[in-house]
Length: 464
Ligand code: G6P
Image (tube, rainbow, N blue to C red; front, side):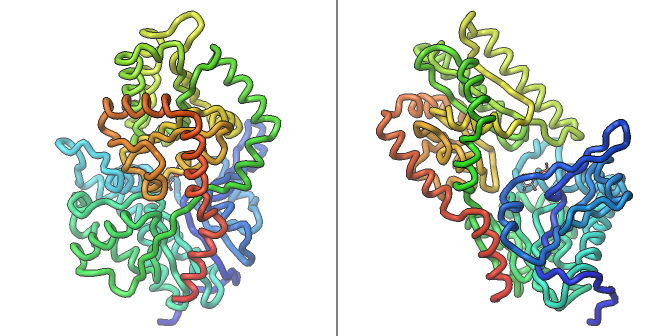
């Protein structure tokens, strides 16, 4: 098929994701300031030349920047109609696809696929098409395009129709739902999603488990995966960056403040750092900590749960309610057990990366207990950074379990009592064993650093 698109640039490597590497804030005086983001993809791409990142404008600041022609080199932000974007992002991506892959529905009442869902789905298609068209315009002849995540599941198929010359990859940063759960979706939607992704030459996943689940869905719904190759690329922590960043002055400062807040002599810390996200299971983590204090009173005044729960997806009521529940439960525990010089739960809700690193360094125990998680980088980062080596309590439903399970204390995330016991085991692990295990966890966690993770995918895409 001959492309009807005018190719406007000649980028050889293109990445597409809903959230881009930069965002803009609009201040009251009308000025615009840029904020650069971090994460695996940003560092993964840093070594690549001739690249273009296509992303969506997410708020008023981003939209104002696009309209005034403000752009970072190598980034194209798409100014998609705000209502269309809200339907696609809040309605379909975050309330349907995220829920399916993380198995978050309370199924007696949810999900409901009705006319409102169909209306939002049409926006999801339009939003995916806007990405496919922009990529078709920007990609040089035979370029490699790496499409990220569930938001853009339809892009590979749409882009293949527009530009058959391209090498197209799709990568899922989430888990993939088991067949029976995936089939909660209406049949035609399930088919459309899978066909969209199978428009790619390669579909990548963080673990073998999610890759196998995807293949099983393709087999059940479509009879197979067709010509698309399936790859597993387990993103690791960026050891060099973390070790350097964790010893900068601002982290030292935050750590000193945290140490003071923890108080006491020889008091231990159980650290967790998450977005306040339904799948992260923060509430059951707090319930387990409460049960620990209740059933093993020897820990009272001797341990502090340092819990950082940063705001996320606050446009969705269910996320706002969950955030309130986390706060309420932390307050209840502090009310019930706290003493004048001991606050059992230190809950911080303002995102502060330097403070998170300070907490990582202080951690005796890291608690990572998601209901389901594509990978979970916190589980990989804490052992790399912690000063005296930490014990890791890890959900077997986190992707990181495949690589870290052998040296973690593994829990079923729904089993609050077992999690309380695991916390006790972690707190009482002998120093030598904890340091040894932490060293092995750090080695496993850094096996595939972001740049190699990205280049590995790129090479595979060009090779196959
Ligand atoms: C996490 C997930 C990604 C997802 C991202 C979106 O990082 O691992 O799979 O793309 O959240 O978050 P956002 O804040 O953009 O909704």
